[in-house]
Length: 82
Image (cartoon, rainbow, N blue to C red; front, side, top):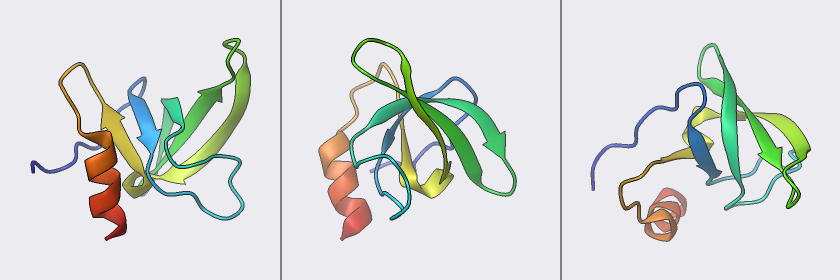
């Protein structure tokens, strides 16, 4: 499997691990709105109506960058937690 790509601003990402205090779940999808040093990202998550549900800061290591290429999200999440 290839190395995971670091997120950039406006990348679509999936959450692969949830900190206990975060209002997100594994598999939630959001958009990176800001990169924070040294290795965190501020991610906006939307509700089903397209309204902002929350904006949360997560470590980049807890995010999987999604793209137009085929990405085996479930397999990658399993590998991260193995």
